[in-house]
Length: 455
Ligand code: ADP
Image (cartoon, rainbow, N blue to C red; front, side, top):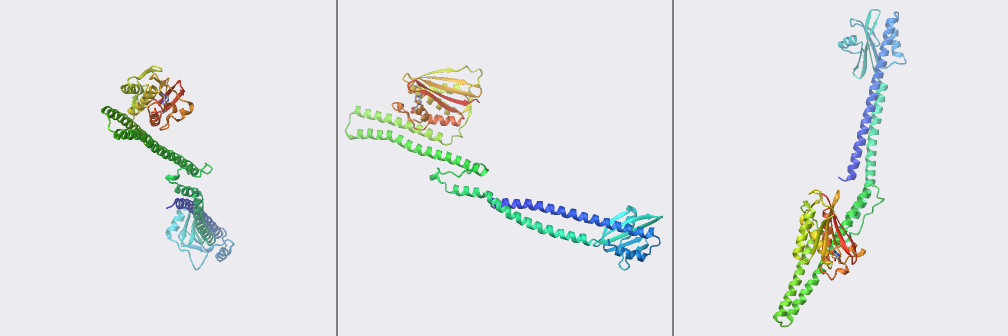
């Protein structure tokens, strides 16, 4: 069932229920009012007749009958009976068609003084009249022809009104539901034209006011992120193949050189040594590429736990010095933590160690003295680690690119590296809801800072 049909169906159901409810109410109120009014008239008729009969002693019963039948207020099929204490008829307004009543009715009238009931289609009232030591029961019955015909008229009007109202509601509901869903249809048609090849396309955001415009805005946001992810993937593949090609070409030329002519044993060893170095470099590169690919993909599933950031620094320092014993790392606290938990963050130990290791490695690598200072500081909400060096530094423009995969500043080309480490660090910090930032000046040095929320 389409949303349009569902909305117009629900709308019709609601309006129809309200209309039916109102119609029933109007009808019931009118019917009750008619009945009550008619009973009042019957009672007044009954009282007038009995008063005539009793108070005007000499009244001629035939005359009374004639008066009864011909008064202006005479009712349709009107009959008035008056009975005495012994249930004997003392007056009847008609000769031929007497009112049929059950004997219990008379008892009920004597008991309750007034009774309202029906007699076939006719309404009937019984009243007790007490005067001059007489207890007379007056029964008056008639058919409310005008009232019933008015009621029948009302029934008909309400029925057709209701039917018309329901059809109108269906039509209007369908029309307005269609109108309000039109923009969704429009969006639908636009979405159908978007494929992996034209992710640049965006949906029409209208005036950015209603919910449907908002949907388009959000969808465009998703498209933008998708486009970025596709772009990242594409650039990763092209950069990765480019990076791999260079060491592979070096390997190939080394091998070709070795095959070209007979070589001395020394020469052989030298070539094998070069091959080993190039292969090591290739392994390091493919490891970095693998890590970058993994971090660019979904790393949300990594296990996180509370860890002390100063322990991470010590672990990274140990790992670095194992590979580069000539590097110097100086550690200090910005302020000595007062409790054990001040430097605790929620994170993945091996990923955070990789970040600090990468920062320390860069700091020592890009500084002639191979020296890095690392400090840790804590605030009410955050913990930060800064890695400071006095190395080659970076210009403001270079600083804006260093977290992009494969970017290397021109001054860094003479140093070993692939331009992958900082991109990985950036992504890992994103996964930890943290930040990484840099302050640097060319030829003076750099300070890289990572900030994480306190656990
Ligand atoms: P790599 O160091 O392997 O080139 P990174 O991703 O770690 O890759 O760094 C990217 C670039 O950022 C480096 O090529 C260099 O230009 C710059 N950079 C990083 N750390 C420093 C630093 N401490 N001092 C100067 N430049 C740096």
